[in-house]
Image (cartoon, rainbow, N blue to C red; front, side, top):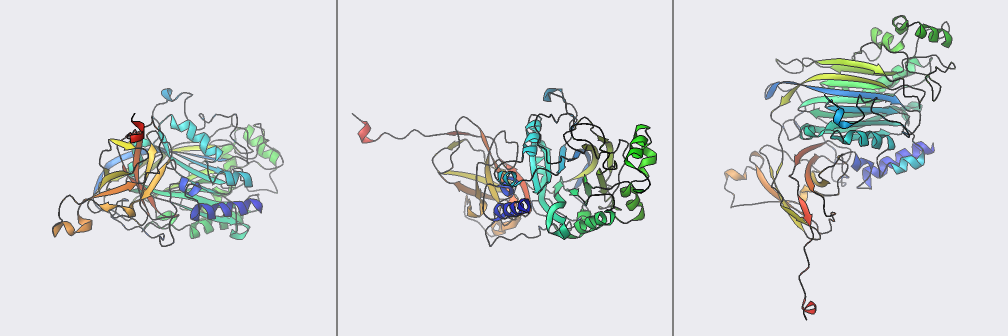
Length: 506
């Protein structure tokens, strides 16, 4: 109970009290009482949420690499994650890297001291993945955690300005929906205008709990509600990737012993064994996950192992509990067909800190870029003076709709996470920069580009000797919809030497 209380306390703190906490780390801002989460309309700077019938470019292919792993409350000490992510030992040796890494973990250690620690710093697993990927120029876009469920999205830096309308959601299914040890966390976002929903789930355990697993799935589908128009539900999205410890076991509990299953695995009778898979059966019957597809696993069951070994624990019947499924709405747009290809699907038996083996899968998806995406452009910043007010200018493009809690953050040039802001200001305090008297045509406020100015306080203290950037975030506030829509040039900081006083003159 203490773990759940600390998680709930953390959610309250991150959403309403602390500006630099897990919620802020997760690419969101604390909103005032008058800022309410609202649906984001189509056609604004976030790239639109509904069907598009024009303004689409020729298709491009993007690659997504997904990992799911029940880590059994273990910490990532003394392990390397290169092989799990398909990476070489050195970044210089890597070739043909994916555009996105998505990591879904279950049973992350959520003891009270760790939950409170995570309010102010990245979870140790997130930090481990981030340290590995930063050398490959990946940036943490979003992280969402519900007790032991942890989901993180990493993107190559070149894609940052094309990831819009990012939002998280979670659903508890443990103890009838009041406990977060089971359930799902998700991140939805638009990638170059196409919508993607990523769901990391941990469903009810044990062989005989099939109906509970089906109920968990239905509850997640029903209760997951987003706030992007026309994309409120999971399956409203162009692409859905659903993964995690889904806990589906093998049928025949009374007739097939753990030893018999182990013997079939040793004889490489996986095709015969997979026919007993509960997930495969409920999908065929249309009882759950029927909207999703999966390449059938060609690797041995990933549960349950003796800790520290690759030997099955005969106290449980081996099963393919850890899965990665996908769905695509092929005909969402006129004269355009979306496609997805699952190019790999495998387990990683060399990792033995848990009683589960991790599973990875790589996908290629077809993206039709939305040419109507709008970007905020910063006026070049030549120098930032420490200890003084600094005024910046930026241009909001024609048709761009500012959200209720837009903000501009200061980041180091080499930032590796959208949570790593050093200071920020809400744009509601900015003033329009009037270069000349506005005429009637210029008064059509939203129909024309506008140049704005914003002043940062003299209390912003930036270390010298480092270059920085400004990032503009379109945001509807706490647990709202957020998108990065502008990045400035890099700039240096200096501290002005104080003017001599009369007392300094001999």
